[in-house]
Length: 202
Ligand SMILES: [Zn+2]
Image (cartoon, rainbow, N blue to C red):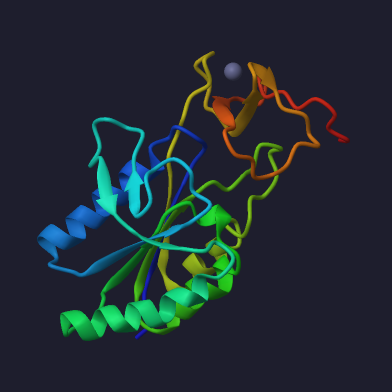
C-alpha cells in the first residue's frame, strides 16, 4: 500500500521546521513509529547532522541524516540499511527544506510507492516570488496519493499575511538577478504591497 504525503508549506518564519519536528515527535512518541529525518546539505542554518528550528518554543534540535541536495537517491540504500539495523520497517521519512532537493517530485513519489509515509516542509516561492524547486509539484502527489497540505502563516510588519520571502542584502532588497540560492542571505516575510524586487522584468 502506498504511503501518504504531508506537506508543510509557508514563507520564511512561519515555523515550518518546528511543525515538522513536532509531527516527528508525535509519531515517535505515540505511534511508536521509526521516523527518519533527512536534510539536504545546502541547508546552512544548523550544525551538520541536525535540523534546528528558529522557533524557540518548538522541539529545538533533532538528529538528521544529511544528503547532497543534488542526489536524494543516495538515501534509498541508507533507508534499507537502517531497516536492517533496527530489524523493522521505517514507517515515515521526513524531509526538511524540500525546495533545495533535486528530483524532489520523483524521489517523493518513489518513497510513497515503496509504502513510506512522507512529510515534506519547505518554501513554495523563492525570493523572486516564483516557484521554488519542485515544492509546488508535490501538491499533485497529495491529491493522487492522499495526504494533506498545511499552510503556515507568517506576517508582514504591517500586519498583513506575508506571501513572499523578501531577500535583504546589507539591509536593502535584493535584485531580481541575484542567485536563487545564496549563502548568508537574510529574509523578511512581506505582503504583496511591501514585497520589493528591484529589476523585475514583469
Ligand atoms: Zn505589508
